[in-house]
Amino acid sequence: MKGIAMRKITICAEKDCSGKTIREKQLHKQLYQQSRSLTGPVLHSFVSWILEEAQERGIHTLYFLARDGYVLQKIARMLCRERGLAIQCRYLYCSRASLRMPSYHLIGEEALDLIFSGGYYVTPERFLERAGIPSAHWEQVMSEAGIRPVPSGQCIQQSKACLQKNSRRTLGWLQIQRYRSRIARSKTFQKCLQEHSRQSYKTAIGYLRQAGLLAQTHIGIVDSGWTGSMQRSLRQLLEAEGFRGQMTGFYFGLYQNPKEQRDGEYLSWYFSPKMNKRRQLFFCNNLLECFLSAPHGMTVDYKLRQGRYEPVLENTEQGTPIPWIRTQLRGILDGAAMQEKAGKVYTLKQCARILGRLMAAPTSEEARVYGNFLFCDDITEGYLYPLAESGQEKLLREHLLAVRLWNRRREQKPMPLFWPFGTIALVRAPLKRSLYWLDACLAQWMRTYLL
Image (cartoon, rainbow, N blue to C red; front, side, top):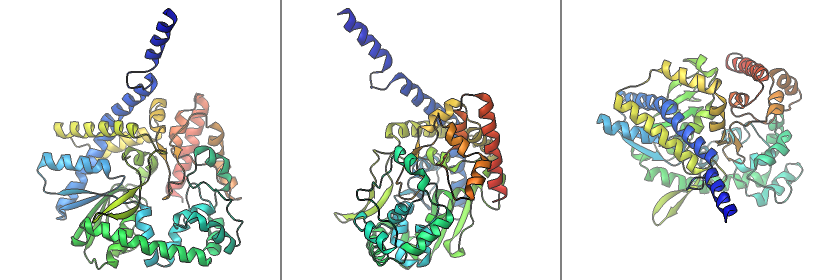
């Protein structure tokens, strides 16, 4: 009996009543505190800027794009309520995939530019996923393209282990162009692409019309940014239905200028190609997207159900655990409410100081906390990988600037580091950590100012 009692005490010491381990509980507490004191105030300032700019332009309805707009919309609603602003803040379920697929049959060669674009982890199978080609037709497409057929049972959703095993298969730019020229000639590929795009168009337009976008004369959309491609896709879809109004996008940051003037106005808060480019130096857009995580899966399609169009969401089982995301949301919203109650709005300079330190010089604990988020840069979310991990010195060596420049000549790409400075912060040896950090800084400087 005494042995049983001792065992129960040990178990209780390791877990709390909710079943969480003590370590998990500590990490949740740290995530909440960091979200409340760091990211919450920064996002409060960003949303304050959005609302001020929208008022100046006479925009009375803002569409916050999923999923990065989830927490931003909640902050915006709170600010509108507290400040008495007559601005509607709506949430639009969409993604690059759900907007691009219905537009492919409208945009000609640009569709191939999007399907055969680069990324951290690009394989021939990834192109077929982006194009929405059913896996049953993959072998036929590859055969028509003169490429070795995909093995039967090829797994679309790739785990971390699968990514590590196949990381050497990722394609460089020249290889991507070669695959594009061959796959795009496949009759099966073209037929499936056109059919799937036209089918998706009907439900996508139905959802956008139901959301009220076609009834607006001046649409305001809110997203994290980077290239602003979702605004372009929205414009292409709405224009095909006769929309001739104005569109303005409000973004955290932009790496590129809009492709065409007809895509509308692109406003950036933190940096753009023409403004505050130095802020790009230590900025990690992957980490910011994790700050903006939503407790639901990616929008993959739309369907008509009982007279209403609904988004079809991807299963979240493979992604970042929902309780982890909710802890962050609670911290961010509490931090934003704290700022609003105190009547404080951080300046851009203050926000840059917070983000620069957190993104480029995180503590090991901060790296562990945010490293738990799973990330994918591809529109298919065909693989998920931790933002930062310990025990990755071999990978860090492969990312050394000299090694990468050498391997670039042979079109070899290492497995991605989604948050290099986070992974570096988890290196135990101080000297090695400093050397990796200096090398990463030099690589970032070259990418920002030379490339």
